[in-house]
Image 1 (cartoon, rainbow, N blue to C red):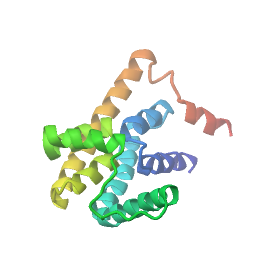
Image 2: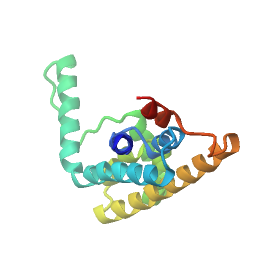
Image 3: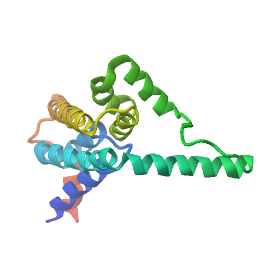
Image 4: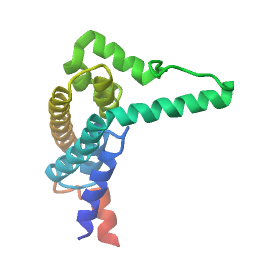
Length: 177
């Protein structure tokens, strides 16, 4: 039963915005968890919150704009801004550059490496892409990065340690308890 909690933690970590499959899958495998369940838990966790972003993007955009305006009003006094004004962060500037160079496929495939999957999905929707296309491309992207990361970590770890000799950091901790 304790090992199930480890996979739940992997799911929750992957579901956390700004923590990506590219980092969570290796963490789980290096911890000694089985690669396939780690990959599935991380994929599903990340996908769940990315889909939430896609389907709630309008509410998220409104919230972020209101938050930004409230901060500016507190600093600058009572200044009014139109809803069209968007203050760009470094990540959104990178996402915009990706969008301009490669379009939706480029932003969703390369985005998890450069800006994160949640921001890539959010920006894709902000740039006017249709939900079904963003959803399809994000599923493709997350699948691609999950497979690449899982295979790379599993076989990369195998170059340094044989699977028989390596129990994993997390398994050692659970078994000592």
